[in-house]
Image (cartoon, rainbow, N blue to C red; front, top):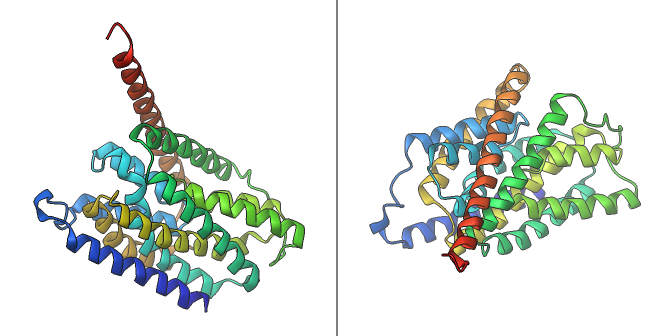
Length: 295
């Protein structure tokens, strides 16, 4: 039932996306086919995402480095463009890894609720607010990456289910992580930390976090599509390149050396975070100068 619901949510997003894109005026050129950089970014970031590195932070870094997408519509582009590749990931992991089905479904529902509310807030934020929020989110993502690379994640327990009190904490945390997804911070690393701290087998966290990410991406993606705060060419490129990237990574996940790749991604993420925060601070100073008597 969960797999069927996941497939249905992906289909709903695809249908809404198609209707929205075909209803746009062609004068802007945004309905044109995605460029090679868009597709390559989708392939590489979703390849890494399947390996556990994450896709939101490196995609944001690539968009800013190459100046492909305006800052204020990066969140919507990330969510919509990565949604179908993440659905592909979730179908792999939910089918292959054992976990308590009731708790998995409840945790995914909590994350979806957070993502739905979060998408509504992010879609209405100003350019500076999005820059500041994404810059801070990337710093948090970089911190989790660094902890993981130094082996600082909790070892975790061996349980496939949590006792009631800890399960309640997990529900609250997953709600917050769903909202943060719409600011451009992935839920994979935070989920691994939280569920491990609560005593769950880290392997059991994979279907939960990937299922959560997939449902949030499709549900929040529908809201971003409705708002129009999406770069359509870039989003289509992420999806077109991302799905093959997931399939290739799934077949190679046990043999690739990830250490050097994680360090490279960390450097790029830190650069993007600094650039976003600097841009947000610069825009705030410009507004303050414009409103001062001297101006």
